Image (cartoon, rainbow, N blue to C red; front, side):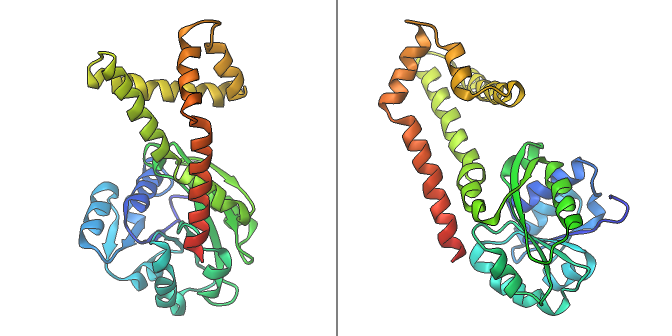
Length: 270
């Protein structure tokens, strides 16, 4: 793949940088075969520093030099970018959009008939090879295009094909989810500090605890509820803590957060 693949980023913000750096680190493509455009010089400079890629102000140059184009701009900027690249977008190109909420139909309508489009919802842990992504194929995207998307995003974590109508839910869950987890880690650390631990120790213990619990879910295949019960001894410390979380409606609040973010994703797309 690395010998022939060229990837262009239309937008060079944090998510684009995380993905590009992940692709390079995974050996899928060298930095010299990546090009990115952005209207902000600071974003372009940071992208180049992190990835070793070529940078430009011109979206047209990105389309000219790359066959896989990753649309990484804000949802309200997608129509303008598509209009700008439409004339030079050919059958050899594949557009992979990570713009939250922007539907395949809108992406395809902004390009020429038969344009190959894939919509992906990744998340920022791509930077450390631990992204959780889902993707849906447009009408003209081929099975080979889907396999390429799978390979790209699996190189920086895990990637699952889903129906497009589920991508807003993916946005609310794994797209926004890292922020929820960071907040939880911070809260765990705060609790440790309140109980007397030094801040650095509390934060490291909190982060490692979340990492270890996640690995238990993924590697044992057991239901999170069953794993929770394994930690919860009768009359012990854990059940006391869980009781406080239930009184604070943790589960209901997290469910509401995912649903609210999913609804916002739908609104962004409209």
